[in-house]
Length: 332
Image (cartoon, rainbow, N blue to C red):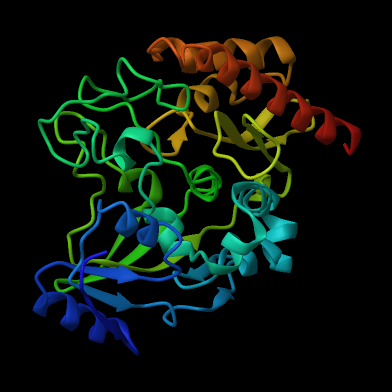
């Protein structure tokens, strides 16, 4: 690693002031991703601004909105009684996302902003447009089993690795962000940018901006929700495909509310809006779920080693929604 300075701050204002004064600063929370990147010389900060003690609370407002501080550890969020009862797919996603040791260290804000786990991104000898724009993308013709099938470009097919973010995308989560220009809100589904021809620019955040908290609005259907993850091994591994889904049926057995998001298939948590649009007000039937899933994946494109993901994603959507429907029908 390169020589660097370290500074622990007491509030967001102190973090922003320190950021503005440095040449290559980085915010540090749990460090479960940043430290790896520093070891591989992908990140070379001259100042680490420790924000790990900021935003460590989870609060619930009178209308049911949950506000999660960016410094909350993944373990604390997954085990919170209100999250487990009102948003079970969020708890399930976090528990499926990493080992216990990593969950104990990783922060909510850091999880959202973690960078891709593409092999070529971590390999300084490989060509990677995320590391150096215009250098090429070795994943296109390389080992791309874990890579993206939706929203890709000729410059990058990397995926966003977070499990937690897939559930947050389905839950319409919003981010409270603070920068030198003040506070603003960003929808989680709007945070990550499509790779296009600038895959090195990954989010809508300004360089100085810091995630302060995540807001999760009340969502009745989230009480009946599931997170399903397919991976190469049952122990700690990134998703080949994952699905976060929530659903509610009316008295006629038709879908009255539905949220679906996918992981492991794109540069961001992929909100399956077409699935939601097709199924709303329709009967909760396996065949309909399959048709909606196929429609969502119609625009998917494989790159040889990851082409299997297209059918895998469609089937996982169908089976997850079918399981939710059966649960709802049994308790009707």
